[in-house]
Image 1 (cartoon, helix red, strand yellow):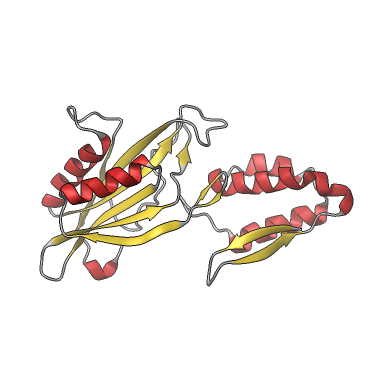
Image 2 (cartoon, one colour):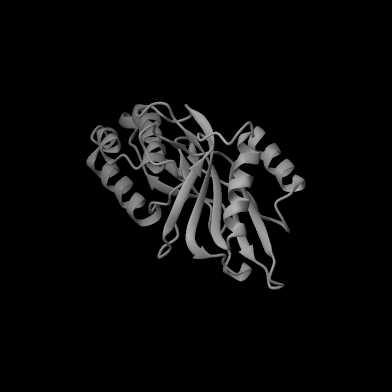
Length: 225
């Protein structure tokens, strides 16, 4: 039996499909193919795997993916789902404390998402979400593993591949984010692993910070992300 770990409403195992005794040698290939598909949504590669298993198994896997695994950018790596380690850590300003916090998370390979919010007192705060891993993108792909908010125009994107003097990636990202936020714009920051290849790209490449600046005002804190 092939199982999936379902996170909501609580962690539980859900049956995806069952392989017969004569097909058990395909288990590792099937699980690997499903995990890879969740990470890169490469339907052709998945179909190659599914063509090797019995029709009933293929149909069950396809039905499970359709019903339970809708595409969500940045939610999976080739090794499985990305977990949220810290849902939300709040900072009153972009200062040394925030930089130290991000430096620590970045050094140990956690995924980072951060955004600005307009507090009720009129000031601007920052919210950081830590994730269990950085998601890989192919060399030729857009450097983004966080879906853009619907109905909001992207003004520009900066990545840490664009040097900012002699600043390190964390400090440079904060400088870019602070400047845009100071103009009253909505800002989101996240990290990813930008591969140097387009095939077999999972886990290869350079860790990058991405700063998205939107042609929109800073959202109120009760609107979240």
